[in-house]
Amino acid sequence: TGSGKTEVYLRLVADALRRGRQVLVLVPEIGLTPQLVRRFRRRLPAAVAVMHSAMSDRDRLNAWLAASAGKARVVIGTRSAVFVHLPDLGLVIVDEEHDASFKQQDGLRYHARDLAVMRALRAGVPVVLGSATPSLESLHNARTGRYRHLRLTQRAGSARPPAVRLVDMESSPLDDGLADQTVAAMRETLAQGEQVLVFLNRRGFAPLLRCPGCGWIAECKRCDARMTYHRGIDRLRCHHCGSERGVDRRCPACGKHKPRPVGLGTERIEESLARRLPAQRIARVDRDSTRRSGALDDLLERARDGSANVLVGTQMLAKGHHLPGVTLVTILDADAGLYSADFRAPERLAQLIVQVSGRAGRAQRPGQVLIQTRFPNHPLLQQLIHHGYGAFADGALADRAAVGFPPFVYQALFRAESARADSAMVFLREVGRILEGDSLVSVQGPAPAPMERVAGRYRAQLLLQAHQRPPLHQVLARCLPQIEALRSPRGLRWSLDVDPSEHN
Image (cartoon, rainbow, N blue to C red; front, top):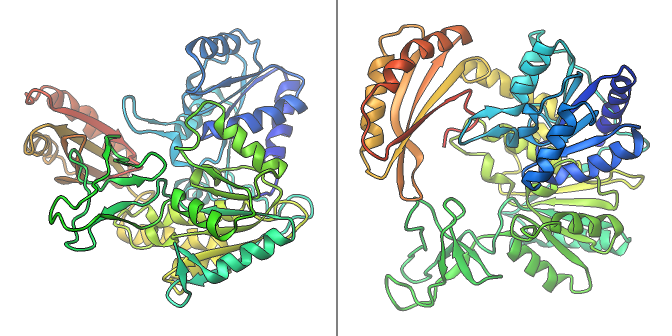
């Protein structure tokens, strides 16, 4: 992080423009687009078009037409920009290539990074995948010779990597999720006129509302999920289906106690910091605080000009933002990915920690990172701190090779959902019978999805796996006509996801 990847992009783009070619630049989040556009327009003598979902249909159409006519020489956009017509395409760049936002999870399922690679291959032009924490798939491709691996081994200018320390939550007194030594480090940093970033990847005030007497927990009526308490609007909200309702003033189960918020969200941390650091200017950056158009830009500008010196936020703050005044980063509740059933969870946690840590000390002043954890001796954390992301990736790839997980195998996931509890499973059993006769692939399932019920619909899935990609596609091509011909109950929906990035 902070090694000057954008400068590399700018010089490559300038070279492509001199050769009369167009350039496509993909970024994972809308929030990264404005700062990148500003830098590109400042440096490049060419028309730069922007494309993302927050634009009006008219503006997106105008950008598309300008690119298609060759008037826009550089297109910067989020994942759907991979489809824009560029008659003089000469270079494709995918920034933060590891980011899960590049995968479209519904409707037309595609991975913009992988499409960008194929598009560049077919056009016969270079494609650059940039990241301080490359995906294990891309690292595997580099190590097997499919990609060329170029390393930026130091930070740009005089900036140095931040010092990282673990704060043991078992031995440190906590107040609203903040250890005393964490708050002491914040006070010391702020007293020096520097900024603090507090990272918690959970919005709202508390992830659950619980009765202290009988243990009742507020759950969503449409999902197998708990409702999150949002104090700002004093309501419970499901972060899976979007439903919300008022707060229970008395426990519906026992009727004796008032349910209490349990756990941490960004709202709670903001409130706690306002109480413990009353003289400081705090800005919260999450999906709730940035709903209004332009709100994210306003909050980031407050961070850059110093009018906010304590930033509290989710992963929206972790991705590529240059915040030169931040010298202390605190990561709260980093343990969620250490013991997850998802085999990708350790990779995503390692990427998140490195990316968030990279916001500290990007200018002349040295940075430090405090990670609050109940498992300070966990191998993943120890490996990251003492040996870096590369060493973690080596171990993670070895683990995946040993157990037969991607990128050492290829997968396709059939998903089905229905309003009836058994319909999805019955349908996928029929799909399994069609596929099981083929020895080129292994079929696993069907099984209920890890969260079986979402928005009132029951979900199940069936996994296909092969050691090589061609047999997987051969089986799918041969069997899909039979699967599409199956009679399915009314209201049942099914989909096929090749190279699934989520199994939820």
